[in-house]
Length: 324
Image 1 (cartoon, rainbow, N blue to C red):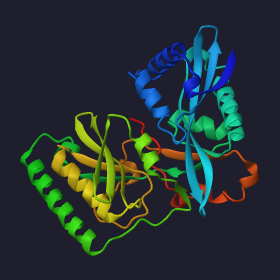
Image 2 (image 1 turned 90 degrees about the horizontal axis):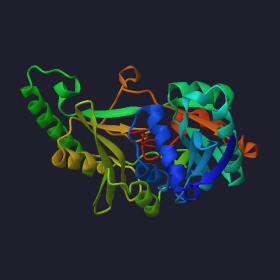
Image 3 (image 1 turned 135 degrees about the vertical axis):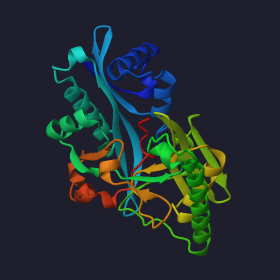
Image 4 (image 1 turned 120 degrees about the horizontal axis):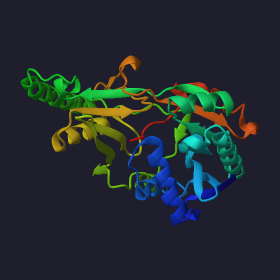
């Protein structure tokens, strides 16, 4: 087995064909080269890092790190999001994932990456925390605005209630929108703050699956997804003058309600903003727990980043990752 760490543009067409095949075999999905390349090139650098396990003419395993830039007390530092891992079933007993991950961590450290983050599935979560030195932060929160209540609850009777609920939600949004003009509120800055630029947003949401819109000094982005018959609008980001505000949130939700036939609007991630529009979903009702974990690569900064296990200090959500 030969393990190589390559940048996105260093992978060949033959590599991509085998990577796509590996993903689809492992997760029973229908991913494509275009989707994967689009994801990996949407980073601040325009590429990502990939650990690839070659066994003769087969790619037996694969994992990636997507670079981001964060701010800590106005000082920039580099973060990598570890994601998109697979190991073919016939190679899972050989600690290949550990070898891939350690090789990737070593290269990322040399490239100036201070911290690795991850949002793993249940199996990967146990492995990463038990064997690869990752620490738990917490489970990412969900915020929701149910629009057509009975569809969300998967109830078939009294469907006229959906029309009533959609009207009530639209009125509720209008009231919040008026309130946001009277009392504008801004999100409290996080200790570990994602560095946002127009260039970053342009790259991050360049794929055709995202709908982006601008209203004067307000920008927002969302994605429509069919969740087993429920039309869900995932709010990826919303900003007014580069800050999340209640006015930007209401503008985004108002747009979605008017332009899309959606059953529910969701925001997944940290939200340090006082607002009355989205309801925080109890953990027991979340469709899929999303644990955030971290691993400090540069031990010389360990003291500086000791507080990373506190979710309240993070700015992290769908703007970092999109697991759909």
